[in-house]
Amino acid sequence: MDTFGDRLKSEREDRGLSIQAVAEILRVDHDRLRALERNDFDALPDEAVMMDCLNAYAECLQVDADLMIEDYVRERDQCLRRLEDVMVEQVAETAPAAIPTEAERRPRFSPWLVALVVVGIAMPAAWWMLSRDGTAPRQETSLATAPVEPQPLSLKTPADVAPTPMEPPAAQSAPTAPARSLLSITEYGVGTAVENLHLVGQGDRFAEGTQVSFWTRVQGGTRGDRIDHVWLREGVTVARISLEVGGSNWRTYSTKTLYVGVAGDWAGEARDDAGRVLARSEFVCVP
Image (cartoon, rainbow, N blue to C red; front, side, top):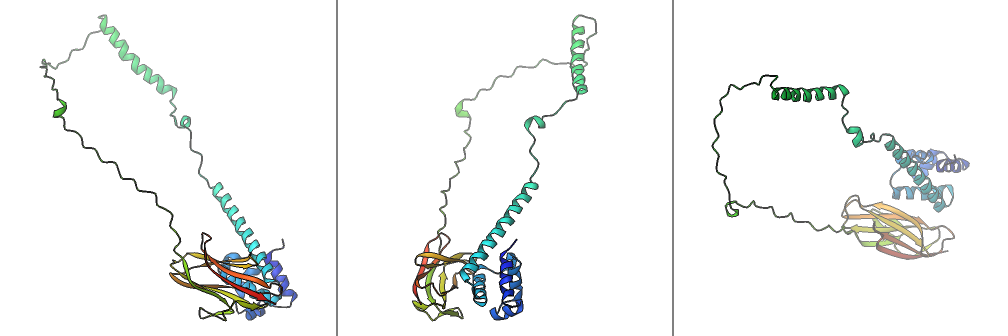
């Protein structure tokens, strides 16, 4: 089956480029390129790093970066779905045995045990019947018995009985409202590059062929939170990049190459996991 990795390898070999040559051009580890060509998505870094790598790889091969990224995302998602299906099948195969029904748990008695029980009941009954008509001697006890004096019945009025204290009902806690995202964007913008975690070349007008960076400073987050960078052209989403937040004061960015033919009104938006727009930078791409 023709996969994303097969197509990427074919494009590279058609241009006479080796893995080592591409790795030097892109300044990346050649093991990452080999993982791409064998569709080993688990060995690849996070989304933001891969988007940068694929954009640069597309420029090296002189192909459409958007189409390459779309092809990569589709292949990766299909691979993850196949892996989830395999895990579900494995769980089904190791499912516990069915719980026995009430009838199956009911004890089964042996006919011999039933017969012994019947005999054990019948023999004392027969002995009692014989003792009534005088054919069998009655056994006498050797213990003398004394009359028992009747004891007066003790009656207590309700006033004599101490009431049992009752536990007050446990207080019910009110349902906890879902926590609202505390993330906020205090600084943001678009420019031509990010150097030492600072945006450079900031502006609102860029020519075709420029690689534009959307930079944001995230406040109030914790490790593991995520925000999405969404790139829009003429109001239509053309790329969505998920970025992990590593702390309460975190700077992150994503990049987009403005290829020839994509002139128009552009915007970069930062959104939280609920889809709320935290920041928006608008710019124009000119021919």
